[in-house]
Length: 445
Image (cartoon, rainbow, N blue to C red):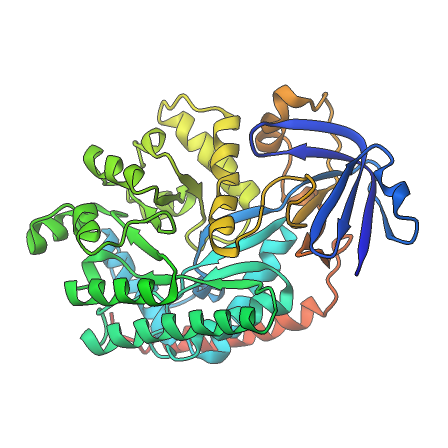
């Protein structure tokens, strides 16, 4: 049994009901918070002490949709053709990159994405993976990098027919099932998995009906839900109407794929009835404002209608301080009425996905909740109180404030220092990235 006392901290609850407590102790036993309050640590004289004077503890942040395979794409120097619409962007850029990835590239992508997330105060990343040249075993490779850095996560393989038809679909399904079974085996051995499994799919326009049926079978056999892009671009909706004579959500629902453990992504072009169906099935929808702007696919104007809206990055790193700011400002720029508290609610709702998959409580600094914590060195120039807790989160704090991070009761970063050589990993990642870029240049769209 291990006990850590964070002494004399400010504790801010970033999930409603918002609140601020000053000069309290947070006591963590093993992987769970057991006490929060004035002098609460005095009951644990032999505990490890962390002096949190002048620091702020918030629940760890959740990136509800990430693409770890994009980790080596930053500044990618390759020859690419016109990118005048979303399909050209996919074909000229992302689909060439993912075809160039091998086991080593996936491993270093996972390491650096996990390090970047932890350094930014993000304790959980829900990944959506693709590497058509390395399908078998790819999810374990991603999970290995997550575990070694110490970030909590979930991953899946995006089932698609875009490269190899039904054989590629089958391979993706098999990889999702195999990884889910490996997680189940951990639990049978009495372990608490740090990385969970989902059943991934690229997007409805690259998954035939036979593939959706196979995804449903995979969900039923593993007890997991799907993680799938929907209506990121209008092309997806048009394709569904053209090929299947149905709205996307009706098509998914006809296969029983909408449930309370379903995570859909983007949804910019869903109509009112589709949002109603989404809510009726209690499915999650991830909003990714930076990616939407980068890919020029539009703005999701129905955000306020989604009951279980969460926040992701779609591969634009793991920095949720940046994402929540961009989400707020883009919304205001579009004439939206939401305020910081609304977006803090969206961000922290990602903890509900974790609860659904890990079966424990996440998202509050309270007894009984998992010890996934972010410790900030934020010097507030104005009072930080219950009424403006979310406002400080959006307007004041940033990833530059992150001092330390605890995940599953383990200090994975302490005073901005990891327990391993980050420079060595980044140097090797740069070598791997150059190799991948060269390979991308040999791949035709």
